[in-house]
Length: 631
Image (cartoon, rainbow, N blue to C red):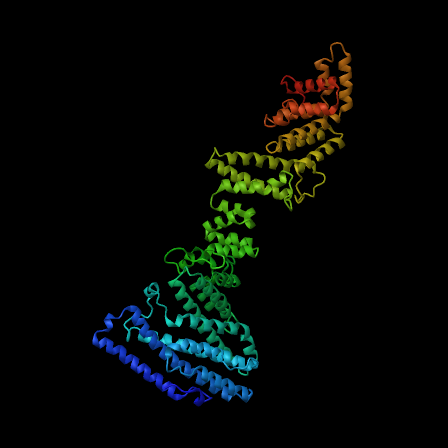
């Protein structure tokens, strides 16, 4: 019968409560057997049979709860370091919280909730008593659930004629009582207390090893039960937002607790990893595998340590086949980010700036990495690596070109590449673009990139020539934009007295101007005109003298005489080299071939019409194959 609170013993639950539960279980078992023998049990649905089994489990759990409570209170009585008044009050509150457990076993989850919050407990109770309350509650709950699970395993087939675990019941809305929201709330609250006070419990323990072992078992049991319970709910109603949120909170609470030193004393995190995998806790999986990455990462063919597949996240990323133990991960998404498993892993490493890991792990999930690189700008500059791996040569070339395009156009792109980096990037782009052209020779993108690549490599080579006396030789100098290179070429021309050097700098300048043609025609014309003008001004006295003499002569200077006298000028020398080396590819920057360039040069030199005619005539002579001005 029910034991009144005024008559209740203050040391432990009374023996008659245990006797009443034993009697209840006998009546319950006899009732089920009666239904079987009467032939009525076969008409009971699977849901009804599960409810009958739930009742039997609750009776077993109630008995285990009272028994465990008796044990805990007896141990407390043996403790001599607690205030007797507080201890007595605490024992009385605990026993009162469990009063009537044997009468209505269906109220057991509520009794557990009352047990963790005794109604009359002093809020100022000292830390030791609060820790005792936490340990007693969790111990009673875990012992009760453990007994219920054992009862389910032993009696499901023998007494109730149902499987130990029937996933089909989930679709019918049948949740085991051990996964009820009341039970899960108690487990969650107790684990939260351990998260806050677990270390304090052990640090103040007079029997450290014993208490650590007890706490370890309680955390393991409570974590497994909590996650299994929410998994039952989530499987029944995966679209329920509240259930999904609570399940996620349970994972983020239980998994780190399983990794604490008093639970995971060996530091192997095996149980935490198993729970993370079972419940698709992506955060736990990645963090554990990352922390143990030294045990699974390949250390080279001569390493004495073989990779440990237990923590090898590569196997999990690639485990999409039906027979893989990790296939369920790829059918799940992370609650907070909404990302599937592979995408979550890549984002996790990207968030921590581990770009190398993103690309390396992405080998195991090519589609996810492609998706990530397209949608996330953090690794956009490295997307070409993955594109080359998968044979997307056109996209790889385009990515490489775009890495340096802002620098070649003279725009601010943050920290600019140096000469060596630019040359390496564009050389890779050139190779990739050639492969792309072999697959798609008519591609407009391939054609555009081909022009950009050649121009970019020409700019690098031109800067090397212009700065050959100033460079350190390691290629670490920052690349200059075209407008600055034009200025540098002009300065080199103006400061040189050697025609051969002027020719070299002049051709570099024209190549620089031509490299801007695909982006800015005006800049090309201006750059080319500036170079031609500088070449002319290097011998301006010669040209002015010849212009005066030519205008004063009745028939002008003969072509043979003119040819001899202008042969040594920089302007004619550059024209000669330009005509023979450009092969028509740089006509846009030619003095004769581009009327806009010629007009701007002549305008810059002033209104001397005789000089203009002489320059044009001299350039035409260079272009005539019958004449040979070769310096």
